[in-house]
Amino acid sequence: MPTPRRGYPSDLTDDQWALIEPLLPEASTDGQPEKHPRREIVNAILYVGAGGLSVAVPAR
Image (tube, rainbow, N blue to C red; front, side, top):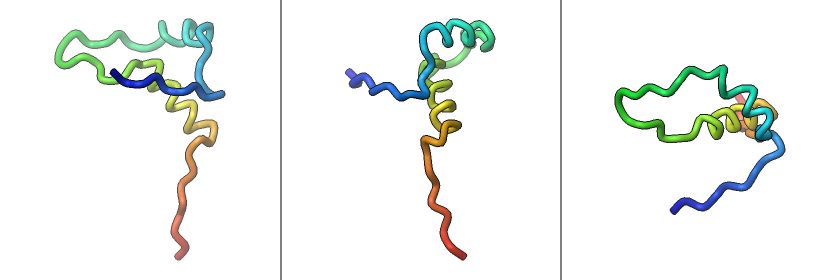
């Protein structure tokens, strides 16, 4: 059983998710089930957008 991940300040609140979730297309019933919950994907996008990842650019 996976361990629950810690929350980040950029994570959506339940109220914010309630506003966004209806705007997403419905999950397809064809093929495999979704591997990751949509809310976690949106949280990851917000984390990166908030500057949560830094990329080291090599010097020329």
